[in-house]
Amino acid sequence: MQRTQVQLTAAQIESLRAVASRENVSISEVVRRAVDALTQAGAAPSVAELRQRALDASGRFSSGSTDVARRHDDYLSEAYRS
Image (spheres, rainbow, N blue to C red):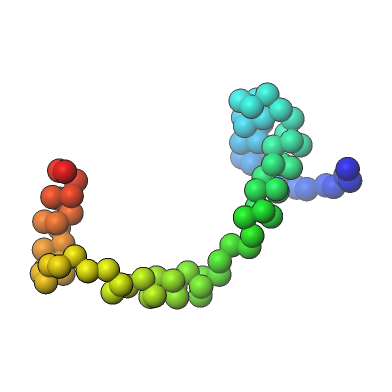
């Protein structure tokens, strides 16, 4: 393994300590797991890509109702009651 030096905020250190304590591992192990999770998941999508995904999704689904824009609160309320 190679050593590296990273500067973290006090809040970040406290969070790492809490996770390490809860999982009974070292802070280094928590950091290695986080790095693995980040790099294995791939790069986070850019803001432009997220916007495009949202635009691509809009209008793709049909509820069959023609008054959703006017009655969205009513439909949401019904959904939470179900």
